[in-house]
Amino acid sequence: MQQRLVVIGGGAAGFFCAVNAAQMNPGLKVTILEKTSKLLSKVRISGGGRCNVTHAVFDIVELSKRYPRGQNFVKKTFHQFFTTDTIKWFEERGVKTKAEKDGRMFPVTDSSECIIECLMNEANSYGVDIRMNAEVKQLTSTEGGQFDLLLTNNQTITADYVVLATGGYPKASMFDWLKSLGHNFSEPVPSLFTFNLPKHPITELMGVSVEQARVKIEGSRLVEEGPVLVTHWGLSGPAVLRLSAWGARELKEKNYDFKAHVNWLPEHNDQSLKEVFQNFRKTAATKKIINQNFAALPNRLWEFLMKQSSIDTELRFADLPVKAENAFIKNLIDYVVEVKGKTTFKEEFVTAGGINLSEVDVNTMMSKKLPNLFFAGEVLDVDGVTGGFNFQHAWTSGWIAAKTIAQYSSER
Image (cartoon, rainbow, N blue to C red; front, side, top):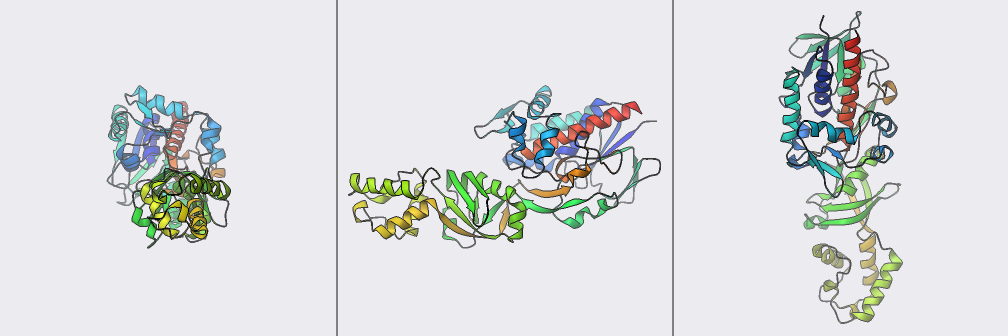
């Protein structure tokens, strides 16, 4: 009798698991249940519609450091399916990828549609049954070791293997239907968000980007360095997003109400900047400060920080009061903003939290509590910083589950 795998969730992890299981064991009947009317929605919008497939880090230990939660878990899973395998998998199916200077990897077409087309072609080639608007409201295990899935339309499906690839749940209550399976989960909290600065004057600089700045959260050890972007609601960019990921739980406890310190010139400290200003007083005494943007900061930001330091745009170095100079130095290396709230960063919505990793076999992705129940992707308590790391975890966990299921089903 033909065995059946049901994958709950038509996102990256679920789809990758389904097509690989179907390819590895053509005798397996594979069904994807997607509760919405859209497949691979995160894949479609990721990277501004280009799909940030993975990241060009080719050392397992290095790559695992990009995961605020699940670091030790992925350090083991990557031995089975790594970035090199992702690149090779897609390339073998006609999708070549390229690395950008920040390490993010995209298809050479710069379009997520080729990734979606590739996955859909695989599904069609291996007869994967895809059902849309098919939400599971109850999952129970039978005495015979199978699973009964009750859908919201009251239809029932029986499966020999089930993969939960539902993505991250933003609310703890959304895990309720899984509690009957005996699994525990870490409470979900938002990750990868930008910092809101309501009515702060810096938001008038929306669009201004600094390539290398350091951002620190006051009263914590959280600090990140990298590009910072000023938006109409506050601060964003890779440095801020990484901070939000590493500090997901800590910032939630602060109710997203905290002070952030921005050093726009991380190569400088108070003393080295004072020496720079002293030098300008000697060598450029008659020149206007506004025209001596030695730090190569965006001109709008340079002028803004001058005004914040009560320095007139016509002022020359020779006439710069010591008090104003000290204020300017402080604003350049320790600009303090009060953060009040957060905003989800475009398509990069990720939830920290999920099924406890101690309850999942890292070698197979199978539940330690219920045989033939598997997990893949963001439903696990694994999340990475922005840059393709969450997709890499999705491909890896989906592939491992597929390999295990294909092997088990061919032996039965």
